[in-house]
Length: 125
Image 1 (cartoon, rainbow, N blue to C red):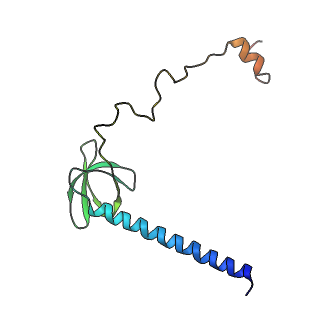
Image 2 (tube, helix red, strand yellow):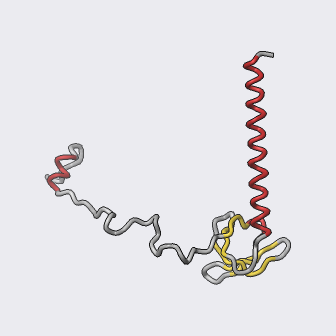
């Protein structure tokens, strides 16, 4: 067996091992989330619905949406427990820029617009 073939074989085995370990870690995280479900928690389902847990059984979970509607879901549908906001965090969301830094609308005069757009009809008859 050549050295190149051996390296290729080891690389393939390594990639398969990484995929296997990643899948096992994701499964363990899902089991952890589902075991921590309790009434009053805000959760997100795999479909992207945010709701509050009302009741938890062995196989199902009762969720209340913002509109007040309650529905029963399979426990495995819950993929994330939404963390509660930190009361010590700053009032302003760091992902939203300040109003002072947001650029305002720009206007282009009609004459400048015509001089830049040579293929468009001028609107003159």
